[in-house]
Amino acid sequence: MLIFLSVLRKNGWLVHGQSLPGWDGFVDFSPDQLSRAASNVPLGVDILSAGGSPSRIRQLQSPDGWSLDTSYLNCHVRARGGFQSGSVVVLMVTRPAEATICNTPLEPGVVLTIPGGQDIFASIKPGAGYAAAVLPADTWLDIQETTTRMQAGGMPKAPTAIRLSAQGSRHVGKRFAALPSHLDSSGARNDAWRMPAAVSEYLSAIAEASTDQALAERQLDRSLRHRLQQAWKADEYVRAHLGEALSVMRLCRELRVSRRQLEYAFGTAFGVGPAQYIQLTRLNESRRKLLSARRTGQSVTEIVMETGITHLSRFATKYRTLFAELPSETARRPAA
Image (cartoon, rainbow, N blue to C red; front, side):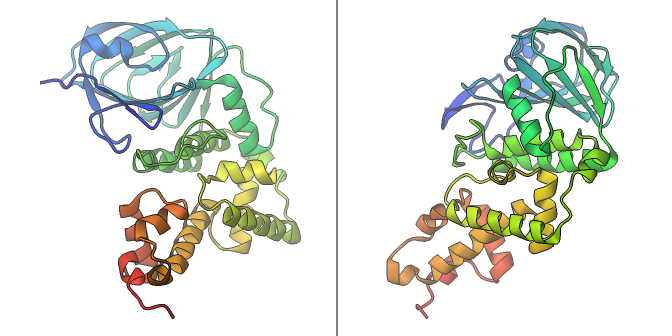
């Protein structure tokens, strides 16, 4: 039996799926529902052959004009449609198949960018998988420029396809794989981006992987003094805003450096990347507060939320890995 699409509203986001918290559940789509398979992109869909199993789709939509879909299509479809100018589709192939979108084969490592106002046409055979973000064109240009510190040069007039390197594909794949566990209903909304940090991080990874790496390498600031200054300035910012929704993108914007430069600086100063550094800083700050919990009367949950952590079970696992005890055990200790 097919599970029909349900729509749930949580913290301002529209989550299409079976379960909350998180963007972690797929919904089986019947053939008649496939016209709704692309969020914010009206499509006319013809089924050319039945599949052996239902198509599986999960969707995250925001009233602010962006969406993110993951689709695994298990039937042969022909689709045609369009969407409004001022928006853009950024599509990343997750599972190749005999399929084309706008005359671009869906092959491994391909990122397809489709500007608004274009006619979208696709022929997709069973087995194809892709993640498609629809967002305002200005937001996409801003993500590109913030990530790379290079002028994006405006939106292309026609669909463009870029094949990522093997390293770039792995980099984007890791961000994509991390999305479900980071898009939970308790996550703080990042007002600077009007989307969860995990989504902007994923799009930032695509922007970085799509950049001319030789040019990006030449633009790195290799001064040791500058790298250390950048890392310690970022550290000050992280500590001052620890209770907020922090992302690598936000640090890049604050320091006016590319993502690659920021990772270079953190690797030099701290031996870990900026995302891991934010996590470790939160864990250490939580421990300091937990050691004083008996004196302050704060609960573990209160302390964790103060330090910007929103997923308690993941926090407890990482805390125990780092400190060899559970947060609750730390909180029960007598004050030193």
